[in-house]
Image (cartoon, rainbow over all chains, first blue to last red; front, side):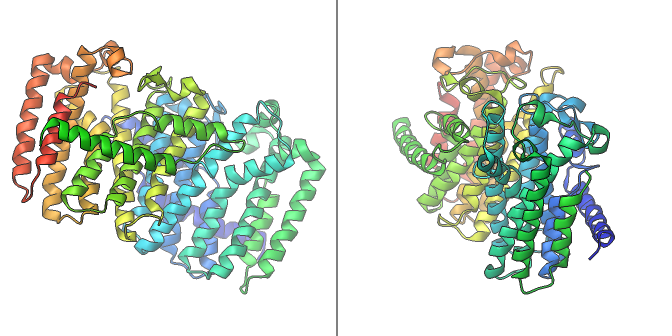
Length: 297
Length: 297
């Protein structure tokens, strides 16, 4: 599979997930209209939808229902969007821009941003738990558990907490890798695993897929750090160089630019080895890994 | 049932739910220790556990499994605790005290409080979704959906958003009642409904129980407003008179003290009528209503 094939597939998933998100987010009404507007502002009109794409791509590998993949992809994007809203708050990263637009607390106010993030997290679980999409109660509850674990104090929130500490204390490479594994990797791994679950993949394949997802999540973050060190705000649509300015360890500060690029290559080889163990055509997953390590935004 | 019977029952539930919460909350460890400490600070060592008690009391009415009631009660308390942590933040109520102790952002810092709240919300859904307690996948997923709806932008978060507006714009009685129904009532109604679900109550009884819960939630808030207007900080363990100071409409400011007390009486009669329709011994629910309308903290 070449890059333009992948880009076309990605565009199709983005479009479908965008429509699903627009349908799932409540329309602004009543006295709480600004909360609902803030939720839509946070979620719609931007975003790579990388996590939703991972659900759909892995689901496709196992013949999962497309509507089910879209729903779970949307749930992951709602969860991810909430984390960005809270990450951007003045007490956290204090960011002004996200996806080329003012962050939620800038476009609305801080209290509305806190509540919009909270409500988006609840909505992520609600849309998984609802009966209006094709999945059994057993699958839906396993997804809720997986998403909650990836999101909470043994996953994303722990990573964010360590990220706060990284401003004051210097982390070594192993600690930085663990931070990223929790902060980004847990949700990336959930996305891959959810696609496999929706396609009823055998347990023997779900284990290597999770290892693939870990390598992918780490590669994603290293590429982010490289872009953050070499790109400009107009290209990225968000503030750049913030981590370095805050004195936080990044893969680039720990390994250097060349070292970070070498680590990407190592992860790519590791991912290829893992995928070669799977008894199916994994061209799409290979292409996703390439795209992650070469993307420009 | 007299008041001392109820107090003894409440104490037993508080004790059991407290133990369940202590077990469910992760022990502090690793670089993320302060996040985990903040979560425990927010949840343990205080709180009336009123919502957990409602789950257990309604569950008892229908012969539900006690361990299942404790688990769901703990989940509701985790959700409630997260909402208090975020409500207390400087951008929201900017509160210094909660349950007689410094609020989470005072005891730790603002960023940790935001993340601890986020992680507590995820944990609430996680403990419902896990398989380590006696409930079918169908029951667990219905509980997740109910809790998510009660917590999100059609429930608690909407109420909190309207509460923010109430500082700038004056709400009339109907709007104040809707605010409270969303902010407090949705979670109270979920608690009653969850107990009925765990006991496999017939749908014909779940509908009047929800109406009872609505009256109970409203009575709870009116009693809160009365206490806020007449009590002192030492008794309540939290800042008093804050709503009135912020110019927010309360049931006391809208109805006067006598009017608010009369409304409590009207709700009590309404609740008694609803309960009389149920073909079982509802003495415990009557006693809970009395306790709510007469409590001193």
